[in-house]
Image (cartoon, rainbow, N blue to C red; front, top):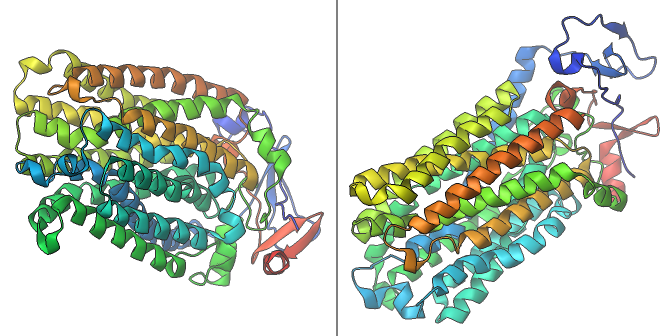
Length: 522
């Protein structure tokens, strides 16, 4: 049975976007269930009044944050490491050419670039199907399946013997990872208000970047394992990091709660608060089956395509630099071991910037100018790397990388913007997955941005990235202006809420116990 929340359609009343203070509220009590405390009406829109204090809400949401975000951060760290460790593996033991991955697998010419891009072929195709299965199998089980399967295959990269094997296993890793990022975005929308999803996803994304930024340190240490058991250092890197992800996937099955209604770490009162503050336009636990009409309707929104294309161009630059930053730094004149360590500071800086910008964006409920703060420094950084780099010292060129990586903070901002400007479980699942699928086409393209014939300064690659970000800037402005002009589910309008008590859903005017709904669907 399809459960839906009782709600009022958001109006075009200008007061909703400017504030409530000048509107005279009309207060009324609902005649039926006592679950509703009352509501304040603004034209044809209404805000149901809470029966809890701000401090109660703050405390319970802090409890939710601690239960979800740290573990999701660990999981996303594993994804970052297994997706990007090939960039570290390719320069492991570079001072002993016969012990390198490039030599042992015959990665001459642009074969390494194609190994990078192969990951995204299946990854992009399976994003939407995977996201539509999140609620069918429950988030903890589906996310655990994703992690365990990709971890096993990532470890298998340590056993490949030639270029063809590398391509096949990289492609399979991408197939198994498909759905993790949009799945976590959908998952968070079961727990948080729309405008909170972006910051929570950014905490997860940025926190994972902080931890995985030390991947260079791990690679530095693993390089010393070269020859142990007759296994090359780069193989040990894949084996150890892939195995760790598989173990984390198994733990996720037991540690990640599914929905507020079914959680064990919340009391009944806390469940009431978490559920009651959710927007009526958000996904619902009762929507176990996806609705095909809504899925098709999702593809009629031009704003989804604008945001998807903007994310794709952003990820071209992000993957381009993250995959090649060890090689770019090494080409600046540093030893391979030093280059591994020097990847840490710019990625760590970008990670902190991701968290700060997206926290500020959500707290102020503003996207466009925060997007400018991400894009403008990066555009300047890439254009300087493309033009004046030959005149700079090694450390001068290295310093410009800190500007270039600032655009990474735009990734969760776009994903959050796409998620909060839609409604319902099916639409949210399709839209978040489609946006990320299109975005990750940029990953396949990004693997081709920096070519060996452009070394050592990679000026052509920097030109490409700078121009891409200028296009992103234009698309962001168009999309945000369109959302503000047309959208009903942004800003204050996104958070007009009704209250569901104890996991109740409203269907056809009758209150349903969600536990019964889930039992019927099982």
